[in-house]
Image (cartoon, rainbow, N blue to C red; front, side, top):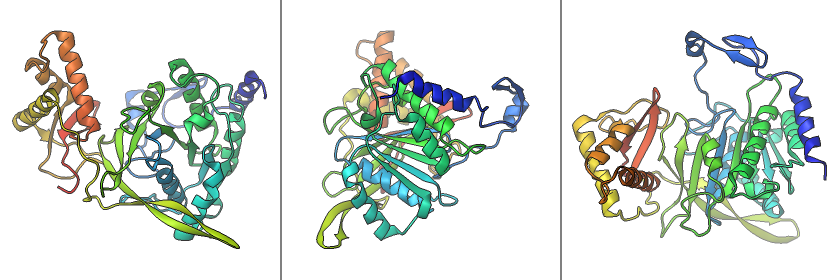
Length: 391
Protein backbone atom coordinates (compact mmCIF):
# COMPACT_ATOMS: atom_id res chain seq x y z
CA UNK A 1 0.00 0.00 0.00
CA UNK A 2 1.45 3.43 -0.92
CA UNK A 3 2.31 5.70 1.97
CA UNK A 4 -0.42 8.23 2.78
CA UNK A 5 2.01 11.12 2.36
CA UNK A 6 2.91 9.88 -1.14
CA UNK A 7 -0.76 10.03 -2.12
CA UNK A 8 -1.23 13.56 -0.83
CA UNK A 9 2.07 14.64 -2.39
CA UNK A 10 0.68 13.57 -5.76
CA UNK A 11 -2.42 15.69 -5.21
CA UNK A 12 -0.35 18.65 -4.08
CA UNK A 13 1.85 18.41 -7.19
CA UNK A 14 -1.30 18.38 -9.32
CA UNK A 15 -2.48 21.57 -7.62
CA UNK A 16 0.87 23.25 -8.11
CA UNK A 17 0.02 23.47 -11.80
CA UNK A 18 -2.08 26.42 -10.67
CA UNK A 19 -5.71 26.97 -9.71
CA UNK A 20 -8.15 25.44 -12.20
CA UNK A 21 -10.73 28.17 -11.80
CA UNK A 22 -9.13 31.46 -12.70
CA UNK A 23 -10.63 34.65 -14.01
CA UNK A 24 -13.87 36.25 -12.94
CA UNK A 25 -14.53 39.47 -11.03
CA UNK A 26 -12.23 40.76 -8.32
CA UNK A 27 -8.51 40.94 -7.76
CA UNK A 28 -6.25 37.89 -7.56
CA UNK A 29 -3.90 37.70 -4.55
CA UNK A 30 -1.86 34.52 -4.77
CA UNK A 31 -4.43 31.71 -4.95
CA UNK A 32 -7.16 33.87 -3.43
CA UNK A 33 -9.52 36.33 -5.11
CA UNK A 34 -10.82 39.37 -3.27
CA UNK A 35 -14.08 40.97 -4.44
CA UNK A 36 -16.05 44.11 -3.73
CA UNK A 37 -19.81 43.88 -3.23
CA UNK A 38 -20.30 44.96 -6.84
CA UNK A 39 -17.96 42.17 -7.94
CA UNK A 40 -20.03 39.68 -5.94
CA UNK A 41 -23.29 41.01 -7.41
CA UNK A 42 -21.92 40.43 -10.92
CA UNK A 43 -21.28 36.72 -10.30
CA UNK A 44 -23.34 34.39 -12.52
CA UNK A 45 -26.45 32.80 -10.96
CA UNK A 46 -26.29 29.28 -9.57
CA UNK A 47 -26.58 26.65 -12.27
CA UNK A 48 -27.84 23.06 -12.13
CA UNK A 49 -27.03 19.64 -13.54
CA UNK A 50 -30.51 18.54 -12.46
CA UNK A 51 -32.78 21.54 -11.74
CA UNK A 52 -33.42 22.22 -8.09
CA UNK A 53 -31.26 19.32 -6.89
CA UNK A 54 -27.80 18.68 -8.30
CA UNK A 55 -25.44 21.60 -8.98
CA UNK A 56 -21.87 21.67 -10.33
CA UNK A 57 -19.03 21.63 -7.82
CA UNK A 58 -21.19 20.61 -4.88
CA UNK A 59 -21.37 17.63 -2.52
CA UNK A 60 -24.52 15.61 -1.88
CA UNK A 61 -25.36 12.73 0.45
CA UNK A 62 -28.04 10.16 -0.43
CA UNK A 63 -28.69 7.98 2.60
CA UNK A 64 -31.15 5.46 3.94
CA UNK A 65 -31.63 2.13 5.66
CA UNK A 66 -30.42 -1.08 4.02
CA UNK A 67 -32.65 -2.34 1.19
CA UNK A 68 -34.49 0.98 0.87
CA UNK A 69 -33.56 1.34 -2.81
CA UNK A 70 -31.07 4.19 -2.53
CA UNK A 71 -28.46 2.60 -4.81
CA UNK A 72 -31.05 1.66 -7.45
CA UNK A 73 -32.38 5.24 -7.34
CA UNK A 74 -29.02 7.00 -7.60
CA UNK A 75 -27.85 4.62 -10.35
CA UNK A 76 -31.03 5.31 -12.35
CA UNK A 77 -30.52 9.05 -11.88
CA UNK A 78 -26.87 8.87 -12.96
CA UNK A 79 -27.56 6.65 -15.99
CA UNK A 80 -30.47 8.83 -17.06
CA UNK A 81 -28.44 12.04 -16.75
CA UNK A 82 -25.81 10.52 -19.05
CA UNK A 83 -28.65 10.13 -21.57
CA UNK A 84 -30.00 13.62 -20.95
CA UNK A 85 -33.00 12.31 -19.02
CA UNK A 86 -33.94 13.24 -15.47
CA UNK A 87 -36.81 12.37 -13.12
CA UNK A 88 -39.76 14.07 -11.43
CA UNK A 89 -40.28 16.50 -14.28
CA UNK A 90 -36.70 17.80 -14.10
CA UNK A 91 -34.33 17.24 -16.99
CA UNK A 92 -30.73 18.33 -17.57
CA UNK A 93 -30.09 20.87 -20.31
CA UNK A 94 -27.97 18.24 -22.09
CA UNK A 95 -26.53 14.74 -21.50
CA UNK A 96 -23.92 14.76 -18.73
CA UNK A 97 -20.60 12.98 -18.35
CA UNK A 98 -20.93 10.60 -15.40
CA UNK A 99 -18.35 8.53 -13.51
CA UNK A 100 -19.81 5.81 -11.27
CA UNK A 101 -17.43 4.45 -8.62
CA UNK A 102 -19.06 1.19 -7.48
CA UNK A 103 -17.10 0.00 -4.47
CA UNK A 104 -20.13 -1.82 -2.99
CA UNK A 105 -22.22 -4.44 -4.76
CA UNK A 106 -19.74 -4.54 -7.63
CA UNK A 107 -20.63 -8.19 -8.24
CA UNK A 108 -24.13 -7.35 -9.47
CA UNK A 109 -23.36 -4.04 -11.12
CA UNK A 110 -23.31 -5.46 -14.67
CA UNK A 111 -26.84 -6.85 -14.32
CA UNK A 112 -28.19 -3.55 -13.01
CA UNK A 113 -26.55 -1.56 -15.78
CA UNK A 114 -27.67 -4.03 -18.45
CA UNK A 115 -31.26 -3.58 -17.28
CA UNK A 116 -30.94 0.20 -17.59
CA UNK A 117 -29.23 -0.13 -20.99
CA UNK A 118 -32.02 -2.38 -22.33
CA UNK A 119 -34.75 -0.06 -21.02
CA UNK A 120 -33.27 3.39 -21.61
CA UNK A 121 -30.64 3.12 -24.34
CA UNK A 122 -26.90 3.58 -24.77
CA UNK A 123 -25.23 6.64 -23.21
CA UNK A 124 -21.99 5.86 -25.06
CA UNK A 125 -18.79 7.05 -23.45
CA UNK A 126 -20.64 9.60 -21.32
CA UNK A 127 -21.14 6.92 -18.63
CA UNK A 128 -17.95 5.39 -17.19
CA UNK A 129 -17.66 2.80 -14.45
CA UNK A 130 -15.11 1.69 -11.87
CA UNK A 131 -16.28 -1.51 -10.13
CA UNK A 132 -13.80 -2.46 -7.41
CA UNK A 133 -12.97 -1.78 -3.79
CA UNK A 134 -11.20 1.53 -3.31
CA UNK A 135 -9.89 3.64 -0.45
CA UNK A 136 -10.64 7.33 -0.85
CA UNK A 137 -10.58 8.55 2.75
CA UNK A 138 -7.19 8.76 4.51
CA UNK A 139 -4.73 7.28 3.71
CA UNK A 140 -6.46 7.73 0.31
CA UNK A 141 -4.68 4.99 -1.61
CA UNK A 142 -6.89 5.44 -4.70
CA UNK A 143 -7.90 9.11 -4.43
CA UNK A 144 -5.31 10.58 -6.78
CA UNK A 145 -5.96 7.85 -9.35
CA UNK A 146 -9.72 8.41 -9.18
CA UNK A 147 -9.21 12.15 -9.65
CA UNK A 148 -7.03 11.45 -12.69
CA UNK A 149 -9.60 9.05 -14.16
CA UNK A 150 -12.29 11.66 -13.58
CA UNK A 151 -10.22 14.36 -15.28
CA UNK A 152 -9.61 12.15 -18.30
CA UNK A 153 -13.33 11.34 -18.45
CA UNK A 154 -14.19 15.05 -18.09
CA UNK A 155 -16.67 14.12 -15.38
CA UNK A 156 -19.54 16.42 -14.46
CA UNK A 157 -21.05 14.01 -11.93
CA UNK A 158 -19.18 11.48 -9.77
CA UNK A 159 -21.08 8.84 -7.76
CA UNK A 160 -19.37 7.27 -4.72
CA UNK A 161 -21.09 3.97 -3.86
CA UNK A 162 -20.73 3.77 -0.85
CA UNK A 163 -19.08 5.80 1.90
CA UNK A 164 -18.54 2.66 3.99
CA UNK A 165 -16.54 0.89 1.26
CA UNK A 166 -14.40 3.93 0.42
CA UNK A 167 -13.98 5.50 3.87
CA UNK A 168 -10.40 4.45 4.49
CA UNK A 169 -8.91 3.95 7.92
CA UNK A 170 -10.44 5.37 11.08
CA UNK A 171 -13.87 5.39 12.68
CA UNK A 172 -16.97 6.80 10.98
CA UNK A 173 -18.25 7.93 14.38
CA UNK A 174 -15.29 10.25 14.98
CA UNK A 175 -15.74 13.74 13.57
CA UNK A 176 -12.00 14.00 12.88
CA UNK A 177 -11.97 10.81 10.80
CA UNK A 178 -15.14 11.79 8.94
CA UNK A 179 -13.47 15.15 8.31
CA UNK A 180 -10.66 13.29 6.54
CA UNK A 181 -13.20 11.68 4.21
CA UNK A 182 -14.84 15.05 3.54
CA UNK A 183 -11.40 16.49 2.70
CA UNK A 184 -10.96 13.66 0.20
CA UNK A 185 -14.31 14.50 -1.43
CA UNK A 186 -13.25 18.16 -1.61
CA UNK A 187 -10.01 17.12 -3.34
CA UNK A 188 -11.99 14.96 -5.77
CA UNK A 189 -14.26 17.88 -6.65
CA UNK A 190 -11.35 20.29 -7.03
CA UNK A 191 -9.10 17.97 -9.03
CA UNK A 192 -11.56 15.64 -10.76
CA UNK A 193 -13.04 17.93 -13.39
CA UNK A 194 -12.03 18.96 -16.87
CA UNK A 195 -9.09 21.40 -16.64
CA UNK A 196 -10.42 24.93 -17.01
CA UNK A 197 -14.01 23.77 -16.61
CA UNK A 198 -16.45 23.69 -13.69
CA UNK A 199 -15.88 21.30 -10.83
CA UNK A 200 -17.90 18.07 -10.90
CA UNK A 201 -20.65 17.30 -8.44
CA UNK A 202 -19.81 14.43 -6.06
CA UNK A 203 -22.75 12.34 -4.79
CA UNK A 204 -22.03 9.98 -1.88
CA UNK A 205 -24.35 7.06 -1.14
CA UNK A 206 -24.40 6.39 2.60
CA UNK A 207 -26.11 4.00 5.02
CA UNK A 208 -28.40 5.04 7.84
CA UNK A 209 -27.81 4.27 11.47
CA UNK A 210 -28.99 0.86 12.67
CA UNK A 211 -32.63 -0.07 12.15
CA UNK A 212 -35.18 0.72 9.44
CA UNK A 213 -36.42 3.72 11.45
CA UNK A 214 -33.01 5.42 11.37
CA UNK A 215 -33.33 9.18 11.74
CA UNK A 216 -29.74 10.04 10.83
CA UNK A 217 -26.99 8.65 8.59
CA UNK A 218 -24.48 6.30 10.17
CA UNK A 219 -21.45 7.84 11.84
CA UNK A 220 -20.48 11.42 12.55
CA UNK A 221 -22.81 14.21 11.53
CA UNK A 222 -19.88 16.14 10.04
CA UNK A 223 -20.84 14.86 6.57
CA UNK A 224 -24.32 16.39 6.82
CA UNK A 225 -22.79 19.71 7.79
CA UNK A 226 -20.49 19.64 4.77
CA UNK A 227 -23.07 18.49 2.20
CA UNK A 228 -24.87 20.99 -0.03
CA UNK A 229 -27.70 18.51 -0.60
CA UNK A 230 -28.93 15.80 1.81
CA UNK A 231 -31.53 13.31 0.58
CA UNK A 232 -33.06 10.63 2.79
CA UNK A 233 -34.39 7.57 0.95
CA UNK A 234 -37.19 5.64 2.66
CA UNK A 235 -38.91 2.44 1.60
CA UNK A 236 -42.63 2.71 0.90
CA UNK A 237 -45.19 1.24 3.28
CA UNK A 238 -48.24 -0.80 2.31
CA UNK A 239 -48.81 -0.05 -1.39
CA UNK A 240 -47.26 3.41 -1.35
CA UNK A 241 -44.16 4.43 -3.27
CA UNK A 242 -40.73 4.86 -1.77
CA UNK A 243 -39.62 8.43 -1.18
CA UNK A 244 -36.48 10.47 -1.62
CA UNK A 245 -36.98 13.34 0.82
CA UNK A 246 -34.85 16.48 0.53
CA UNK A 247 -33.72 17.10 4.10
CA UNK A 248 -31.39 19.96 3.21
CA UNK A 249 -30.81 21.79 -0.07
CA UNK A 250 -28.52 24.75 -0.56
CA UNK A 251 -30.59 27.77 -1.64
CA UNK A 252 -33.57 25.50 -2.41
CA UNK A 253 -36.61 24.30 -0.50
CA UNK A 254 -36.18 21.61 2.14
CA UNK A 255 -38.81 18.92 2.62
CA UNK A 256 -39.52 18.17 -1.04
CA UNK A 257 -40.78 14.62 -1.64
CA UNK A 258 -39.61 12.71 -4.72
CA UNK A 259 -41.60 9.46 -5.01
CA UNK A 260 -40.28 6.40 -6.84
CA UNK A 261 -40.89 2.68 -7.16
CA UNK A 262 -38.63 -0.30 -7.77
CA UNK A 263 -39.79 -2.46 -10.66
CA UNK A 264 -38.45 -6.00 -10.94
CA UNK A 265 -37.08 -6.87 -14.39
CA UNK A 266 -35.37 -9.89 -15.92
CA UNK A 267 -32.08 -9.51 -17.75
CA UNK A 268 -31.45 -12.10 -20.48
CA UNK A 269 -28.13 -13.96 -20.41
CA UNK A 270 -27.11 -15.98 -23.49
CA UNK A 271 -27.05 -19.67 -22.62
CA UNK A 272 -28.02 -19.04 -18.99
CA UNK A 273 -31.10 -18.39 -16.89
CA UNK A 274 -32.27 -14.74 -16.88
CA UNK A 275 -31.21 -12.76 -13.82
CA UNK A 276 -33.58 -10.54 -11.88
CA UNK A 277 -32.82 -7.01 -10.76
CA UNK A 278 -34.70 -3.76 -10.14
CA UNK A 279 -35.07 -0.47 -11.97
CA UNK A 280 -36.07 2.68 -10.09
CA UNK A 281 -38.75 4.73 -11.82
CA UNK A 282 -40.54 7.84 -10.71
CA UNK A 283 -43.99 7.45 -9.18
CA UNK A 284 -46.95 9.75 -9.49
CA UNK A 285 -46.70 12.74 -7.18
CA UNK A 286 -50.23 12.12 -5.87
CA UNK A 287 -49.61 8.53 -4.82
CA UNK A 288 -49.82 7.73 -1.14
CA UNK A 289 -46.36 7.54 0.38
CA UNK A 290 -45.00 6.72 3.80
CA UNK A 291 -47.24 7.48 6.75
CA UNK A 292 -46.62 10.61 8.75
CA UNK A 293 -45.92 9.75 12.38
CA UNK A 294 -48.42 10.78 15.04
CA UNK A 295 -47.20 13.91 16.77
CA UNK A 296 -46.63 14.30 20.48
CA UNK A 297 -48.56 17.05 22.24
CA UNK A 298 -45.45 19.25 22.27
CA UNK A 299 -44.76 18.78 18.55
CA UNK A 300 -48.42 19.35 17.70
CA UNK A 301 -48.34 22.57 19.73
CA UNK A 302 -45.30 23.82 17.79
CA UNK A 303 -47.13 23.11 14.52
CA UNK A 304 -50.27 24.85 15.77
CA UNK A 305 -48.23 27.89 16.79
CA UNK A 306 -46.71 28.00 13.31
CA UNK A 307 -50.18 27.91 11.73
CA UNK A 308 -51.31 30.74 14.02
CA UNK A 309 -48.27 32.85 13.21
CA UNK A 310 -48.68 32.31 9.47
CA UNK A 311 -52.35 33.28 9.70
CA UNK A 312 -51.43 36.50 11.46
CA UNK A 313 -48.18 37.51 9.77
CA UNK A 314 -47.58 35.20 6.79
CA UNK A 315 -45.78 36.43 3.67
CA UNK A 316 -45.79 35.13 0.10
CA UNK A 317 -43.28 32.32 -0.41
CA UNK A 318 -39.98 33.51 -1.92
CA UNK A 319 -39.17 32.34 -5.42
CA UNK A 320 -36.85 29.30 -5.51
CA UNK A 321 -36.48 26.34 -7.93
CA UNK A 322 -38.36 23.93 -5.66
CA UNK A 323 -40.62 26.31 -3.72
CA UNK A 324 -44.31 25.50 -4.29
CA UNK A 325 -45.95 27.81 -6.83
CA UNK A 326 -49.28 27.76 -4.95
CA UNK A 327 -50.12 31.47 -4.32
CA UNK A 328 -52.29 30.53 -1.34
CA UNK A 329 -49.34 29.27 0.69
CA UNK A 330 -47.69 31.65 3.16
CA UNK A 331 -44.51 31.52 5.20
CA UNK A 332 -42.87 33.21 8.18
CA UNK A 333 -39.28 33.57 9.30
CA UNK A 334 -37.78 30.60 11.11
CA UNK A 335 -36.53 32.87 13.90
CA UNK A 336 -39.97 34.44 14.30
CA UNK A 337 -41.53 30.99 14.71
CA UNK A 338 -38.83 30.05 17.21
CA UNK A 339 -39.46 33.22 19.24
CA UNK A 340 -43.22 32.65 19.10
CA UNK A 341 -42.81 29.11 20.48
CA UNK A 342 -40.54 30.35 23.26
CA UNK A 343 -42.99 33.06 24.32
CA UNK A 344 -45.84 30.53 24.31
CA UNK A 345 -43.96 28.19 26.70
CA UNK A 346 -43.53 25.15 24.49
CA UNK A 347 -41.72 23.29 27.28
CA UNK A 348 -43.43 22.22 30.49
CA UNK A 349 -40.28 23.27 32.36
CA UNK A 350 -40.40 26.82 31.03
CA UNK A 351 -36.69 27.49 31.50
CA UNK A 352 -34.66 29.13 28.73
CA UNK A 353 -32.56 26.05 27.95
CA UNK A 354 -35.60 23.76 28.16
CA UNK A 355 -37.48 25.98 25.70
CA UNK A 356 -34.52 25.96 23.34
CA UNK A 357 -34.28 22.17 23.35
CA UNK A 358 -38.05 21.71 23.06
CA UNK A 359 -38.18 23.84 19.93
CA UNK A 360 -35.14 22.12 18.45
CA UNK A 361 -36.71 18.67 18.93
CA UNK A 362 -40.11 19.73 17.60
CA UNK A 363 -38.69 21.46 14.53
CA UNK A 364 -36.52 18.42 13.72
CA UNK A 365 -39.48 16.03 13.96
CA UNK A 366 -41.83 18.26 11.95
CA UNK A 367 -39.28 18.74 9.18
CA UNK A 368 -38.30 15.05 9.00
CA UNK A 369 -41.97 14.01 8.91
CA UNK A 370 -42.65 16.60 6.18
CA UNK A 371 -45.23 18.58 8.19
CA UNK A 372 -43.21 21.70 7.39
CA UNK A 373 -40.77 22.83 4.71
CA UNK A 374 -38.07 25.51 4.66
CA UNK A 375 -35.89 27.48 2.32
CA UNK A 376 -33.59 30.49 2.48
CA UNK A 377 -34.17 33.82 0.78
CA UNK A 378 -31.73 36.73 0.94
CA UNK A 379 -30.00 35.15 3.92
CA UNK A 380 -33.28 34.64 5.82
CA UNK A 381 -34.62 31.18 6.60
CA UNK A 382 -38.37 30.88 6.15
CA UNK A 383 -40.78 28.07 7.02
CA UNK A 384 -44.26 27.06 5.90
CA UNK A 385 -46.76 24.25 6.53
CA UNK A 386 -46.26 21.57 3.86
CA UNK A 387 -49.27 19.95 2.29
CA UNK A 388 -49.34 16.14 2.10
CA UNK A 389 -48.74 14.56 -1.32
CA UNK A 390 -51.87 14.51 -3.43
CA UNK A 391 -53.57 17.50 -1.75
